[in-house]
Length: 98
Image (cartoon, rainbow, N blue to C red):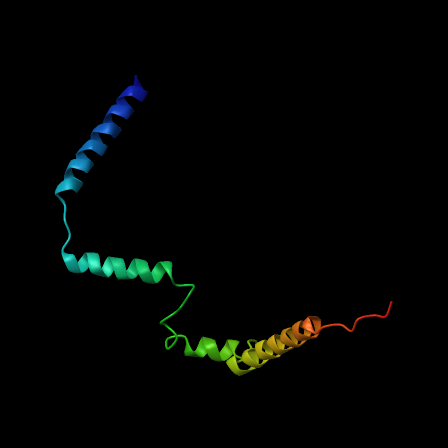
């Protein structure tokens, strides 16, 4: 009997809460601020536009990460090596005498 009474009270409280929430509304600026907060919180690990705020963090990590010039030079070297090996493979071979 106690379980039935607890379930009845719980369902009654949920129904009343649902009725109250249907009539509850927030002003538009609260929704805008909430949306901005959720966008920042969900993209916090990407840090796209917040580079100015993390300037000190970037200085700390700069020693361990290659610069853009270094990574570009490395990628250009790998492309030139790939192109050179591909051109060697495409050269026609001399026919062997029979």
